[in-house]
Image (cartoon, rainbow over all chains, first blue to last red; front, side, top):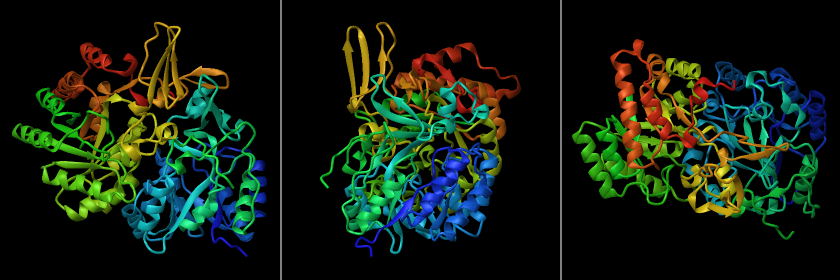
Length: 297
Length: 331
C-alpha cells in the first residue's frame, strides 16, 4: 500500500554499456519496484551493442515482467537515416513513445505519447499544445525551480501527467560534435566507440580539479548526480505523478528502492552516486544547477 | 539571398541599414529575447524610430521574442508579441510553441519565423511548426552540415535562414543548460549565456583566471590573450589533459560557402551579434553585403576576396574562424 501515490520511472540509459551489462541492468530493473521503464538509444545512432529490434525485444520482456514500457526517441536528429529511424520508432504500434524533439511530436500526433524533458515545456501554453498533439504526460525541464514547477502544474491541462527527474547525471547540452571522440582525437565517424569504456561518461574537471561536467558522446552532462530523493514527498504533494531515476553505473537500484520506501511511508537511507561522483540539486532551489542544498530528512 | 543583420541598439540598426542589410533583427529590453544584456536592446521610442527609418529605406525589421515563457509569466511574453505587432514588425522570431500558438491565433497576419532557439533540426520538425503555427521561415541550428541543409531546403515548404558569420554555438541551440548549471541563468530561462554578472577576472602573479560563479573557466599565462569566459569555450581537464574540451574560441565564417547556400535554396544569411558594437555591425554587414552582391552578380565566378576574410577575422573570437558544422572537419 503506497501512502504517496507517485510512480517510479527509469529514464533511458544514456551511456553505451556492453550488451551483457545492459541486459543485466534491465533484468535487475525488472525485479525492482520501478513502475515505468523508458528504453532505447537516445544519444548516438552509431552505438550498436543493442539495435532497434533488440530494444524492442527488451521492451517486450520488461512488459512481460509487469512494467509499463515507453520507447524513447533520440533528442537530436541530423541525418536522413536518423530521421527515418525516428519515424519508424514512432510508427510502431506496440509501445508508447517518449518524444525527444519536435520531429517525433509530428509523427506521434494523434496518438498517446510522453513529451520528453528536452522539449522545453516551460509553461501551460506549451503543455496545452502538446496535450492537443496527444501528449498524456510531460517531463519538466531540468532547470526549472520548485516554485516555477508548482506554477507550471497549476497551468497544465486536465488529465495530463507530470514527471520530474530526481536522480542521475543531467543531460545539459547536445551537439553535432562527439566530445568523446574529440577527446581521443578521433573522427566522429571513426570513433572506435570509446564511450563504451566510460559507463558514467568522461569527467571534465576545471583546471583546479573541481568536478564540473561530464562528456557522453554528443552530450554534455552535469558531473554531479542530481539528487532530489529527499524531496520526493514534496514533489508528490505538488501533484507530480511520476519521479524519474536516470541510470548510472551504480546507485540506480538503490535510488529506486529509496523512492519506493518513501512512498510506503518509510525513511530511506541516503543513496550514494557512483564512486567519485558528487551530488547536486541547485536547480530545484532556484540556484545554479551545480549547487547542493543539504536537506534535513 | 537576404542579408539579416543584428541590432542591439538604434545606432547599430542605423549602421546595419547604412551598410546594406536587407533586414535587421532586434529585441525588447527584457527577458523575452535571447540577448537580454544590460545596456542592450530597444525601448519603445527607439523601436518606433528604428522601424520608421527601416521602412523608409524599404528594409525589414524582425523582432526576436525567442526565449521560453516561464510558468506564471505569460503576460510578459504576450505583451512583447502585442508590442511587436503594434510597432510594425515585419516578422517575429519565436521559439516557444505556446507563444507561437498565441501569436498565430491572435495575429493571423503576423509573419512568424521559427528561431534557432526552437531547435528544429530536420524537415519533420520544421513542417510540424508550419502546420501548427504557419511559420514562414526557419532559422537553422549551427549543428548541420551543408548536405543536411540542402536536404532540409529540398524538403520543407518554408524559407530557410542560416547563420553566415558570428560567434558559434557548438551545442544545439535552445536546449543548452550549461550556463544555468553554472550560474542559474540560461538562454532559455533568462535570455543569457555565461552572463556578465557571474564573471570574475582574478589576476595573480601575472596569471589571469576567468571565473563564472566561482568556477574556473579558463586560466591565462602572462602575455596570453584572454577571452570572455563563455562556458563551452573554456579549457578543462579531461583525463589529465587540459584543453578546449568542447570548443575553441572561434567564430563561424561561411563567406566561402555562399554560392552553395544560394544554389540549395537558402533564403537568408544571418549575422550573429546583437551584443556587438555599431562598428562591428558596419564592418561585418558591409563585408557580407559585398560578398552577396558578388554571388548575385555571378555565382559561378565567385571567390571570397582576401580583404573580406581579413575583415571578418578581425571580428572573430580569438581571431579564429571556422566553417563549423557546415564542413564538419571533425566528422
